[in-house]
Length: 298
Image (cartoon, rainbow, N blue to C red; front, side, top):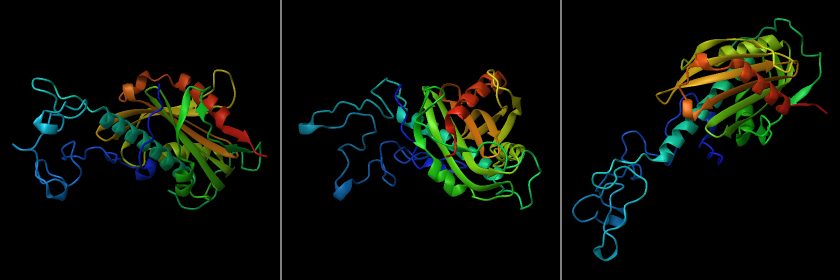
C-alpha cells in the first residue's frame, strides 16, 4: 500500500490535535475557505451563482449556461444520492491521532529524563558506566521491512527532551513515525548516559498517562522475547483523542546508554479490545525493532 501522507504540524501540538490545515474546521461548511459564507460575494466582489448558493458537491452552471458535472468527492451528492464521505477528512483524523501518539511518547520520555520530578539522584541499578554503549538510529524501515518511515521526529523530540535530568545525562533523542497498511507505529528513543535503566522504564510508562487523556487498560509487565535476550516492559493504554478511543499497545526498554519506546495504532481497529492484544507477539516485534534501531557507538 502507499505510505500515508505525513501529518501536518508534527506532534508539537500534543496533547490534543485539531483538524489539519486544509480540512473543514468544526462548524465550517466543507468546500469554503475559512471566513467565507455560503452564497456570499466571491473574490473581487463577484456575485454568487444565479438563484442562490450552490452546495458543495452539486452541479453549478458551466460555460454558456450548461450544467457542470458534480465533483467526485464532497458533501452532498446528486438528487436521491447519499452524501459521500470525504476520505481526506478521515485520513487527516487518523494522522492527527498518530501525531498525538507521538506526543504521548514524548511526554513519557520527558518524565524519564526527569522533567516532571525534582532533582535527586538515581535509585541505583546497573549504573550508567557499565555495559556496551549504543546510540538510537531511525532506519527507513522497521520490523524486517514491514513498516516504512513516514516522518522522522528526531529534531522535534530533541527540542522537547532535556539533555540532563535526575537519571539521564548528555541525552540525544531519535525517533520516527512508521506505517504498514492500516497500522501506524511510533518509535522514540534516547541515548547518552542512563544511571538506572529500571527507573527510566518506570518513569517513561508513568509519564504516558500524565496528560489525563490516557489510561492504563492492561498493566505493564516484563516480557522475554521468544528468541531470548533482554526483557522489555509492555502494556496497553487507551487514549481518547479527537473524540475517539484509541487502543495503544506499547513496549519500553532501557540499558546503561539507551532507552526506547514503541507504540502502535491500527486505523482499522482503533478501539480494539485491549484484552485481545497479544503482548508477547508485540514484545517480539518491539525486540526486533530494538535490534534495528540500537547500534553500537564508535
